[in-house]
Length: 381
Image (cartoon, rainbow, N blue to C red; front, side, top):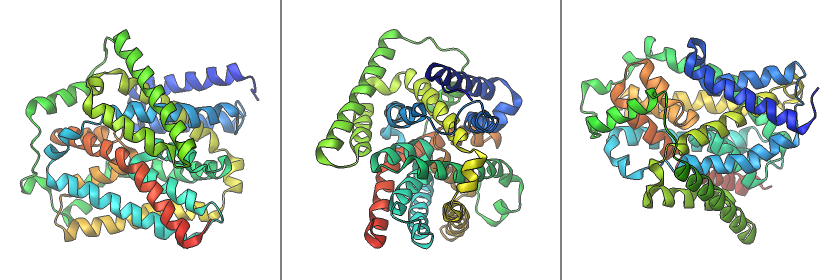
């Protein structure tokens, strides 16, 4: 087993690069998506004994790299376009987020895991409204133990793969016939054809010329914002992610930084590397020690949220296409919605899906902290 720090970093970087390359250049990689590719590669690396299950390098990625990636991700949050997604899409996202919040709280109470239950609830609510990247930042802010985070990642890995693949097949199932379709009514989307075309071009681009000035500005701004956020968190004894996430959103919406392509690339690389470490945590020894409450908690959130959400879509007469996209936006984030929309040829939903997914990441940390605080008040800890 490799323990040399340089070799560990080298293997992590190589696995990250291969995951991104495969998802862009191979049929199986495009089908799985680089998140699943990275998780699978990480699991293989750890289970065959190439890298250790736990290492200081993994902690550096979660505690130092992930916050920078979150800020880079939020640099792309153009909230001025939110209203153009139409009321139905926004309502779908709000309903999905509310369902996840309530189910995460109820599940934490039902599957009490001891003193860190409220922290797990905070991470779970962030995960299911702002995806795993936001959850990692929340975990660092609430100081969830590395063991419990490893358990959560392991418990979430398999259900996520099943869920993501299921989303690609649900359109061919009887479920859509039970729900309303947005093609039967006015979707309310007011994004222009040019904006839609630009979004599709962004997804299909193969080569982009990076500007060294923009790269320097993004990296410098992201690291500075994270540094200030971490410092304020230490001074105020409050959650640092709230500070640096807020600063990232403000900078994105009051400066030209959101137009810089490097935001997307840097965030993608950081989060893919983090996904590799999540896969590494999915070692057979971790599963053998995984508390049944943790696995039951994750399954509970997935199953109950889907059932409740489908019922609410029917009651509120919301389009199933937008509902599916909103549910995926909460769990998978901006990286997951475009492939889903493109797989069903919902070209007019590609950009709205990205926008609402970013919205989930904007508020995911706040929702997670809120859920954790409620559970802490009820259960103590």
